[in-house]
Amino acid sequence: RKRKALPLSVRSLDADDDSPSLSLTSSLHLTKPDYFLLTFFLILGLFTRYYDLQIPASLIWDEPHFTKFVTCYFSGQYFFDIHPPLAKLLMFLTGLIGASFGYQPVQTYYGSYPDNFYVYLRIVPATAGALLVPTIYILSRLINLSRTASSFAATLVLLDGLLLIESRAVLTDSVLLLFSFLSVASSFYLSQQRAFTTRWFTTVIVTGIFLGCSISVKLTALGIIGTIGIHQTFILCRDYGVPFIYPQKISKTTPVGVIRARVVQDLALDGVIRASILLGLVVLIFLAVWHIHFSLLYYNGEGDGFMTPQFKYQFLRLAPKDLPIKCYNQPSSGPQPEIFVPGSYEPMSIFSATIEIIRSINAANNGLKATHPSASKWYTWPLMQCPLVVFYYHQLDNMQHSRMFSVGNVVAWYLTLFLGVFGSLIFFLRRSAFTAQNFRRYVVGHSITSKFSSKTSTTDNVGLTSVSDMDFLVLVIGYLANWAPFYFVPRVTWVYHYQLSLVFSFVIGTCVLDRFTKWLRGSQRWPTLVAILEKLVWFVCFTSIIWCFWKFAPWTFGWYRTSEVQASLQWIA
Image (cartoon, rainbow, N blue to C red):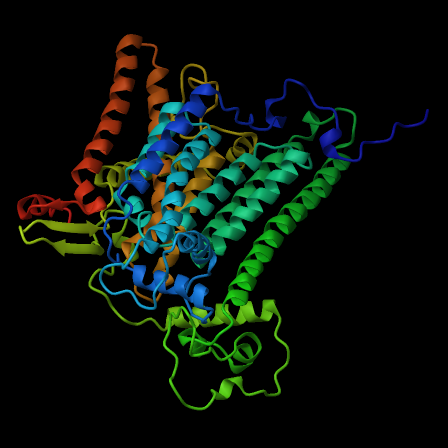
């Protein structure tokens, strides 16, 4: 009898309907309460970031650099920065809106701003900081945290002083955080999609776009790219590990060797497509951003000293002395610079120009040997045992002071760090964590921290399972990948370089706290008392975060306070 042709893909082979190991994680379905909370956190994010955004009307920390860079886009004069230009280009767009209302950039800013042009530049980081709050809520829901836990994670981001002050100044870290965690959330959403479907392709493309935007803001986003690369590898292990380890669950009639061959074939195809789309979009967006940057800066300026004569000859020309807007002064007299004299230079592509500027950025970073009183080492950041960056200081005649420091929410930092370390120890030190049997359980899908295994249903109050081992491990890797590499950074660093890892820490700590409360809920003894205790735990956590935020709000928003009040906050400094 003629043998029936085998399916083209292992995914189309018949499987047992009751086999839980073959089902993908349930895709997140937001309900009305979720949309309400998303709107609620978006409004709070916008309020905390936009409230008195014009205050102070003076330069904050690195604002002299970034305001001058935006001015260079208006004048067309070339500048050099150690970071890619996407965030500065976005500020240029809002600066154009400000210019349409009559506000104009000036060549150099000293002390106070002459008009409200700077407010339009602050809109970009403020908006990014506001959008980060609901993004963390969505990320938390994607890793199967309850609404209460997801709200807590969003609150941690909403009320952290360091994240707040960075999003209320003309700085780029808030833009980096937004694109980075949009990438992470998109990667987790991708893990819930079946490969080669329309939604799967769309999610891969969106993830690649967010990754490209992240690396186009700061090169420190390489840690995010590495984290998502590891996450996608875990996804492939999960999706194709089950039929490879348990081929009998795929088909009882097809030979095992045939099934495993098809698995390897699908695995290779899936992996190549994922990697090609993700990395291709990262490179494409990165090059496109630099192309826009080069096209806007066509005159020579102070920044051209970092570039080769070939680059200067092809992309720059001598700036006229009657520029209406200048970001750098030009020599009043003298011969044309030698670099602009025609020579035997080969044409330089955008790719070659980008490679050159990346080399220049790397050389500039390695050449930064200067020290700073607010600088700190990477290992002092998690416990905030580091000098606080003075963003702003001003004193009135009545002896009231306005100070802005890079102080985070102390309760949030210490609480989530403790919970993260505790949960990670249970994860990595439990018995048989790295045996073959545990790998099988890991591939199939095993809940985090078996020590906290619930005695009741594994679903939470909205029907989602607990955070998986894979998700928790990815978050820990994300934390370490964006913190530990600073050990190798030779240049001076500050506490705000910890922000990417800080947000990971917030989510990790919330995962452990959520699992603990679910463990409490599963207790069969004294259910009423346990329910009260669970609510009390969340109440104490929320109120302590809000209290700490309000205590240090004068340092976050630059409110004027007496010397006595300012001194009462010095315990953390």
